[in-house]
Figure 1 (tube, rainbow, N blue to C red):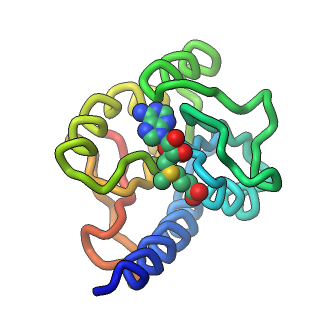
Figure 2 (cartoon, rainbow, N blue to C red; figure 1 turned 90 degrees about the vertical axis):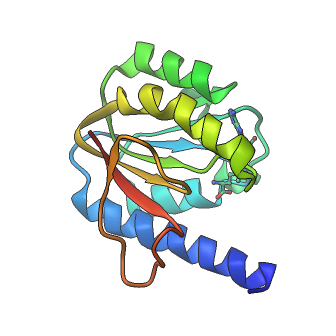
Length: 158
Ligand SMILES: C[S@@+](CC[C@H](N)C(=O)[O-])C[C@H]1O[C@@H](n2cnc3c(N)ncnc32)[C@H](O)[C@@H]1O
């Protein structure tokens, strides 16, 4: 598969998994971990306009039209910012989207392992994590039919 096809599949999987998770998300805030250009954040605020959406990134590189309000943006390393968010809102997140990583398992796997607990403690009971990789100890939920197994993940803590 060409890298172009691979990117198209990844972006479709993000959109379809966010849409599917939205229907099962309990009450609570949303959280974008990895703002980047702001594409998925912009999609989240479009499909869930009634939710507070918190955003974490180590650096603001979003398109100006996709930048979150300052009050909902935490800039810094994910582990520290997840801790800062917990101190602020406690267990209040109904749906988090995790989009960190460089596509290299040697780097991405340890990062996901290190962030599992700080993410899980933010999730309300029944809260969901939509992610670009597997998270040990979380329960994978069925994917939309359009998303190949292992391409993207919808997870429930516990
Ligand atoms: C793939 S991009 C996110 C793309 C974004 N979801 C979108 O749709 O445009 C990953 C982002 O995660 C951020 N990032 C990577 N590792 C991080 C870390 N350990 N802590 C905080 N931010 C990190 C990078 O700065 C980058 O902006």
